[in-house]
Length: 115
Length: 110
Image 1 (tube, each protein chain N blue to C red):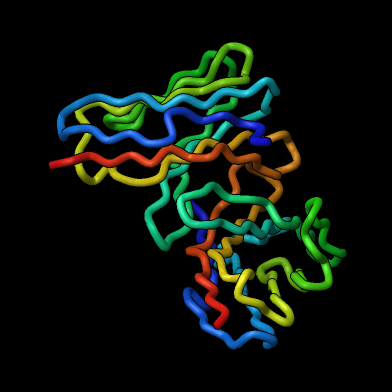
Image 2: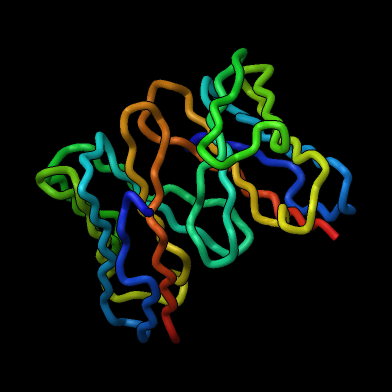
């Protein structure tokens, strides 16, 4: 299957700082990337959908100014958590689709801890 | 509310036993995927089913898509400790956006 790489895998940051998470498709061009958030022992909740070269579409209840998404190229999307607070601590996962197949492939996830 | 209802939420069985996980919805999906996720990692795709009534087998795993494309099941035969993990079903609506079930935590005891 296609490879999606997410970086970093773990990050600890102080309250009030911003953190950037990268999601790269390594062997295919990702026309669409998705960002999810997952709380312990729970399922994945879609935060936003990003299409290359256009603004991201955010799900209801997700603050676009807090979770900045940039999809500047067909192989890279970034999620920046701005002015992070402890309640933003979570597991963030991206997935990518090439727009041709039904499957989307997931990154390894990023464990964010805000102290 | 979850678009896809997954049951049971937790399942703990002895090695060698069989298990079935169910995924139900009132909505029709163009495709349905099953993933397995281990702690601290992203979900790994197990299978995609797209045709109503479709049955796919992957070694000891059997996946079935309902005739109406609203429900699916995952059956594991002779479970092994390596099958332990969080199993997630996800429905696709044709725009590559996935709706996930709540997940089933499977524990296989040696």
